[in-house]
Length: 103
Image 1 (cartoon, rainbow, N blue to C red):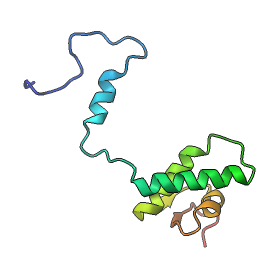
Image 2 (cartoon, rainbow, N blue to C red; image 1 turned 90 degrees about the vertical axis):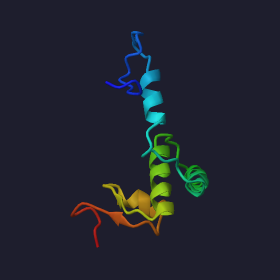
Image 3 (cartoon, one colour; image 1 turned 45 degrees about the horizontal axis):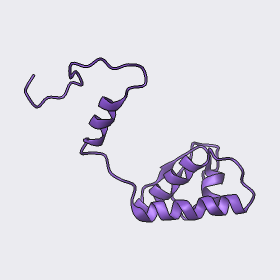
Image 4 (tube, helix red, strand yellow; image 1 turned 60 degrees about the horizontal axis):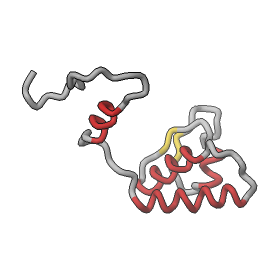
């Protein structure tokens, strides 16, 4: 191992719940990219619309981020829940498994 190699062993034992080493390695990962600001803005608008239409679940927020990110970056989204994504992201290109709403 070279001097600059980070194997996570800094001489300190990690206790349960101590994820600082993993987080720092993740933060330094050059392939990791931030969610674009337009996607974050769209996520807020879509979640607000969801709540205004009577949506009460908070667990949908990750799906909102994923849908907005895919739409803004122009990447098709593979999902089994085409109805929800079409409701809030009608122009999003969806890839659906056979029999779940594929045209």
